Amino acid sequence: MKNNDNSSIFEILKKKAELKQEVYTNTIHTFKIFKNVIKSIKDEYDKNINPKQKNILFEYKIKSEFEIELKFGGDILIFMMHTNVFEFPKSHEVMKTSYLKEDSDRSYCGIINIYNFLGDSFKYNRINDIGYLIGRVFVNKDLHYFIEGESEISLLFNNFVNLKINENEAKKIIESAILYTINFDLLTPPFDAIKEVSVYEIKTTIDNMKMKTGKRLGFKFQKEEEKTENTKD
Image (cartoon, rainbow, N blue to C red):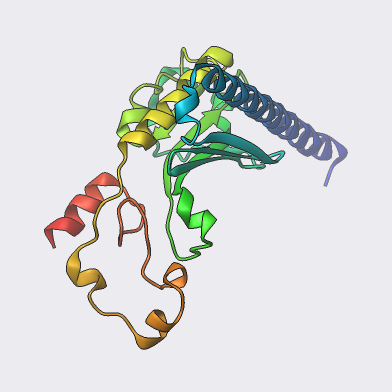
């Protein structure tokens, strides 16, 4: 292989590495903003809560550099940053936008996932319980972002061209996730799904039963259209 060929390879490697590092740095920056905003929401809650309502839980923990746990009422939201950088597949709708066609490097994004769990699932170590990915935040090299997820959230934050991460935008995202979770109620499972219980399950504690608990109890997280099809079957 000729030296000039090596130089070309090294230049491509350097360019791609610098791009991914820039996206990663922006995602870390965004996650730090999330931490600060969650703290400010907690402080605001403490100032406005009626002393008689102190038993209504609202607290957070910084679990690691890449994970925040926010508890409120009977729910937990987990904000988890992925440490890798991703590119959208060619078939993704966002790849058809002029914003990405003008600069393909904009398609490389970091991801912050937002999960919803029942508080009791962690409190009682119910390891079979299921949580739900309610949204994932994509952040690119220009700090532009959009959200893919449940319609109540993604419809508010799907303008990749114009939306740019800052504290105000982060607060909108977090408050929307909280409101969605509050309105996402625990549903009773189908009777036939839980009517059979083994002797082992009864003899072990109820918290360790193999019967899963989740807001869409008995069903794994899936796209709305798939859930509709399953309901019809």
